[in-house]
Length: 110
View 1 (cartoon, one colour):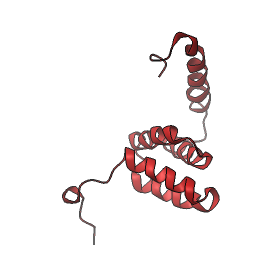
View 2 (view 1 turned 45 degrees about the horizontal axis):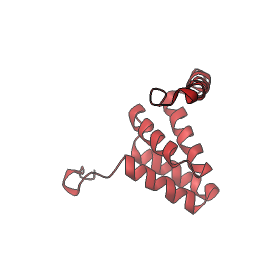
View 3 (view 1 turned 135 degrees about the vertical axis):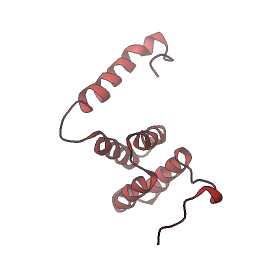
View 4 (view 1 turned 135 degrees about the horizontal axis):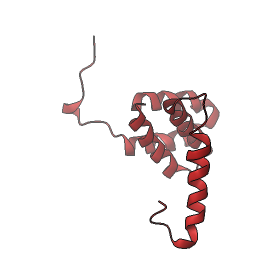
């Protein structure tokens, strides 16, 4: 995002990057999978953060948190964040991590 930003916005991009990825991601206590799941949940709770929810749904997949885990997180958050925010976050997850076509789905384990 910084490379595509106009010159007058680059300082803001630098600050955001340093704050988010420097300050939070270098702290100990949570591993990257926990951090990414927590970030996804926080953006889902805020509302109006669909771009960030999509980015962090993808980020969760990259670090090994699969779609069922994201759906479980939304299920746990739902009583606290309400149905509209839950449904918005679910839509974002579905856009980033769509279900495979019917023929490509693994068969259920018995």
